[in-house]
Each structure stands twice: as structure tokens, then as C-alpha cells.
Length: 165
Image 1 (cartoon, rainbow, N blue to C red):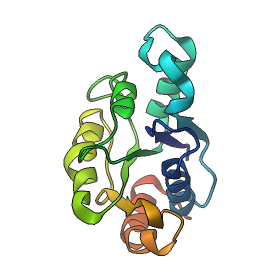
Image 2: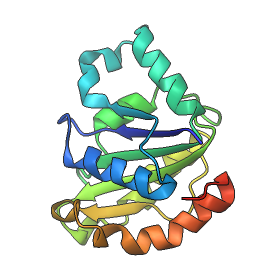
Image 3: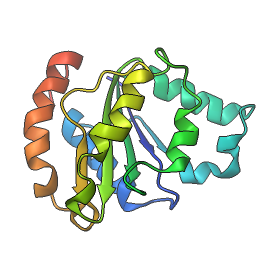
């Protein structure tokens, strides 16, 4: 199973990246095969002729499982993540499972992964197993912040993708 992590935090090496790679490890039992920290791409993410970004998009699209993560900005995911996701063809761009993950400062936006990111991922062709994940950013290193979600979602991922983590 090929696993990718895509992080749309404007700050490289962010808490969002830490959370997303943690989720990937817990769902599969392995480190992700591909990590795309979009902030490190700089303005190239806006250049549709950039070969490296095009290759990253193709690799993410072909992954069996993609953790798509962002901090919560104004109740939704970042514009940086939106720009990257715009490069995928609707209905066929993502061919595997996708997990929407948002980090936020308070529970006020806990429905944001379901209301804002999940519909985009499914429109791009992904299957979203279970519900999206919302983590309070101050708790991003606390395993308990993920425990209930993982208990509910890991069996779905295993069933659909044939993973034994």
C-alpha cells in the first residue's frame, strides 16, 4: 500500500505535518511513502508547467491512501492546499482512500473536515473511509487526541485497502 501525506500549512515542518504523519503511521503501521509539505514548494505550486510539482500531483493521485491535512483558517482549509488540490482532475485525480485532517485552535470548527475538505476529496475521486478528523492543535502530539477516531477508522481502512496495521 502506497501512502502519501499532503500538508497545506503555509509554515514548513508544522504541527499539521506532525499530525498527518502520525495518522499515516497509525493507519498503516509504516512511515508514509511520500510526504508533500506544500509550503516547501514555494511559488512553484502556482506554476502548472513545473515538472516536479506535476510529478508530485501524479504520485499523490496514484497513492492508495492519502492523508490531506491543513490548519483551519476561517472555518476551512488553507488557500495553499486549495491551490494544490486544484491541480487534480475532478472525479479521477485521486484514486485511493483519502483522510481529511484539520487542526484548529478550538472545537468551534470541528465539523470543518466533513463540511469543507471531505466534499472536495470525494469530488476529486477519493473514497473517504469514516469521518474526517479534527484535532485541537495544542493536542497534536497527544495520542489520545486521535485514539477514538483511529479506533473507528482503522478497521474501515483495513477492510477497504486490505491493510493489516
